[in-house]
Amino acid sequence: MLSLKHTFCLIFLLFLANDATAFRFKGLDFYAQLLNGEFLESNPFGGGASAAKADDKVEDSAPRAVLQGQWLQSTLYDRLTYKDKITCTLADRSEHEDGLHPDGGRRSPLRVKCNPVEGNGTLYIITSLKDMVKGLAHYGNSTKRHEVGSCLLMLFYTKTCIHSAMVAPHFNALARHFPDLVVTAIDAYNFHFLNAEFGIVGLPTIMLFHQGRPLVKYNGTEITLTALAKFVTRHTGIEPRLANQKSSTTVLHYISDDFKGPLSNKVEFRTDYWLYVAWAFIVVCACYYFSKSSLYAQIIEMIKRNWRESAAQHS
Image (tube, rainbow, N blue to C red; front, side, top):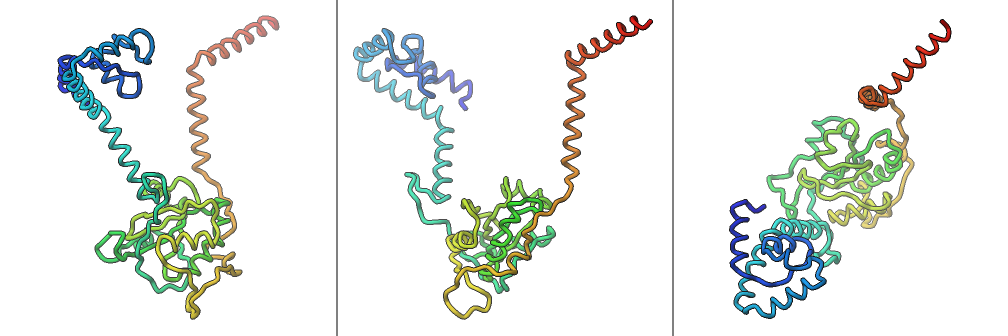
């Protein structure tokens, strides 16, 4: 944002430049035109006699004055649009990191090197904050993506969500096919303070962590064992295998235990008392503000009038 001192300096320089270029009312060019004093002389929409007058003025102006005015306009426009350029740069950088080239083309997926663990292929349910901190512990002192680090795949779910229950068999089977990776699940209802920390806006959410930092979310349209296995392999390079497997190839499959646990595939119905408290608060606030309105006063006055008329008729 330009300070008041810089603004007056730019206005003074623009008046001295005697620039005669006709501006159009488009984006931040309007402010440059307004500061240059030519908004009143030209049509901001580019038509009519004012535009022709501006064109004639450009043809009659000296080349030196035109060049000087264009330089001042360019400087002013750069100052006004500096934050916009920074925002666009950050947006391009974000798209580039998320798997898109600046031209919109696909690039290689974001991949990290994971320190393999000796697991038995069982999904681990996080039940305490201590387990959460232990699971996100660093491997070594580096947090760079190209270096080997601890990886963790976490499912944010809740027992009362039907979609979380539908994901449970697939996630149980995924943990069985990736014993070299720590696969966990956490109840987002019990640890709701972590939702804002990791940007959880909907359930279920699957997120891959590297060195204790969130790396990428699963954004697939469907959650199946095949899709989840491809997601893990794409970003970690770990191929699916079974614990104590001797063959080199693994066929993704389900077993009956995947539908039993550790993550339950049945919806748990429980009373949300905080929801009742919230509704009670809304009703009390609505009643209070309604009692302060003119409509409430009219209704009370009508009831009193009818009551007096009824009492007068029976007396």
